[in-house]
Length: 201
Picture 1 (cartoon, rainbow, N blue to C red):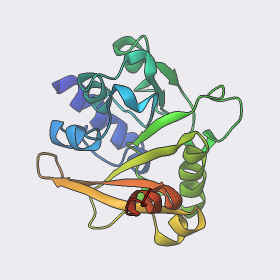
Picture 2 (tube, one colour):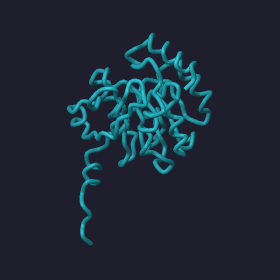
Picture 3 (cartoon, one colour):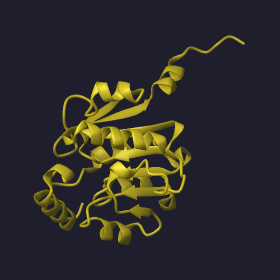
Picture 4 (cartoon, one colour):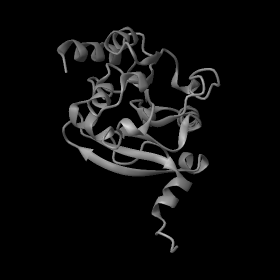
């Protein structure tokens, strides 16, 4: 991670601490953890709040093609940088609350969503728009990956129930400042089907 990226992130945090939520980009430990279940076979990937592209690099390292990555980033300080670094990716400067808009992503269905957004500091209405909108863009077996610095899933249980979703803790990493955990959010029906024992022929 370059010192210029750290400085850019710090300046962005000073301007909008609730939007950026951290004074420094995520580290390699968190990047590896949040992308550990994703590969070329996952299908198109959507990133929310990619910042300087730390998770994007981890996706590329796991074999995901750059052209299969779409990003939604509101911060004007990050968008030009992302376009220079990842010219084959689709990068949209807009609010993640708009993700459910019909014309935004031209009908693309994604295999996974990776969120770098500070959902824990957002109002419930915004979280519902972002998470619900994301699942309207996900394949039936697709998953939403969210990290947090806190001790529990940053999406409230009431919101998960309202959207018929369930959260599963993937892991924790101390190789990040601050240390972080990652949760996989999936549709209740998909998780229940995966838990069923094999049926006799």
